[in-house]
Length: 317
Ligand code: MTE
Image (tube, rainbow, N blue to C red; front, side):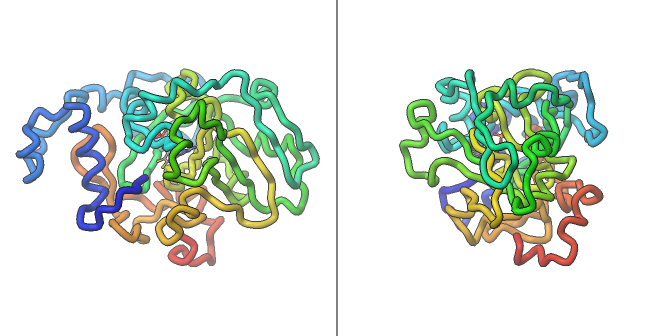
């Protein structure tokens, strides 16, 4: 996500270069990088692992898994967006240790027959955890392939018994400036909030993740519970969730509150609808040099397109 406005520079060009430069992974000199180099001289030192992932073997693989190469664990856990811990990609890994994830409660409210404040361990007891290897496509035109560990959100929702008035699901991140120092700055309106239409929340692709690479979620990735909606831009994947509310009308979402003309409620990955400041037609897989074409719905068209039939995707961006 981007809040520094630099209209003359394409953000999609900036981010991966920052990643490489910040980590001093470039073999080539910075001055040569600015004029554009031959790919072979730009290969980061992590290239070998970028191809093989971390030799991760899913214990309980999901049928929805992609077979693409995994993004190395260190990139997944050291290049993050989590503004509660700072706005630079390296900040969450450095600062998120202040978050206490145990004990953790999630309150469930609104139009459900079983509203309550649940202890996280009780909440997820009996749910089947699967390794879901999904693409995460961020709005800044970079992407990763991550083996999440999680369960379908729908399995949880069914337990709360939503009533017919529940049309949307609203999510909220913890608000605790002592634990989340970034909340002392007004870069976003806190707490971070997100929302889905009920059918999107009930889609079998939508998961709540408690881990990645077979391990517990690192704090910087949204411990202990975060949303993953693989056909939407990464900012819909709200982290460190403490509240889930079933509502009748479309709930507010953090990035839409912040810059409404750039970030809509739906935020479906769509190469044909550009972000006002850059194209969304291509993406750079973290750890790779060449860009690749972005796929409609991030490649999950078969599973999700029918939910939007008849909708104007430009208007409902
Ligand atoms: N959730 C909270 N609470 N705060 C945030 O700043 N950033 C979002 C999303 N969830 C964010 C958040 C954005 S912009 C992205 S791209 C993804 O988290 C990044 O997830 P990752 O760091 O695990 O790759």
